[in-house]
Length: 229
Image 1: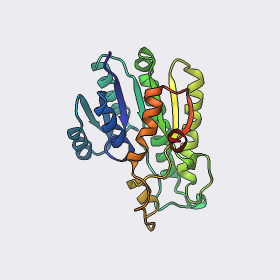
Image 2: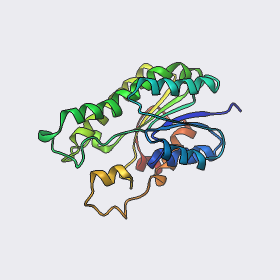
Image 3: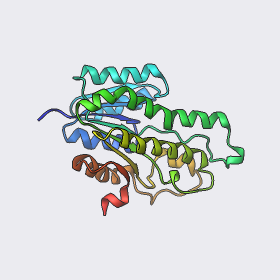
Image 4: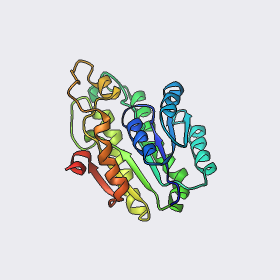
């Protein structure tokens, strides 16, 4: 069986880290990225098997080029791209009337434009393997929560890009997933006054993602809760 290769963005913490551990245990070759080099290197040291860790900002074209080069050096094929890296934007969460527009622009660059740029660069490698693109979204993309307008707008645009990609590239599997509320640093930043001790950790979502990946379910929008029922 040909070795399977996955690129996971935002692999140093949260759901990206949890999924990296699961795929590594399953024998996948991994390329992981995050902005912080120390945290990323620490995760890479935890993972068994073949792992390449590249620190950088996905908003930078040179960093995306380095990720593409890592795929090419590994044989030129990619089975799975996980667009997981994300930013909350302005915090604490402001109302739209007060949202700093420069912060909103930065959030769109990270959450919407950078994932599309990565897909564009890696499309030949994904097509070569009939690969899959897994995007991590949010219920804030489809629901109106006070304070979540900026982040939700970036995720709504990300979901539409994913939807259109699934139509334009029928040879790929394209999934965009609402993982539900997870106990992550991002959620702590968004809700600093809330007690999150009862919120499930990211590891609880991984079985839902593995069901998509291993079963190669049809392209579309999924929720972790729906996949786990």
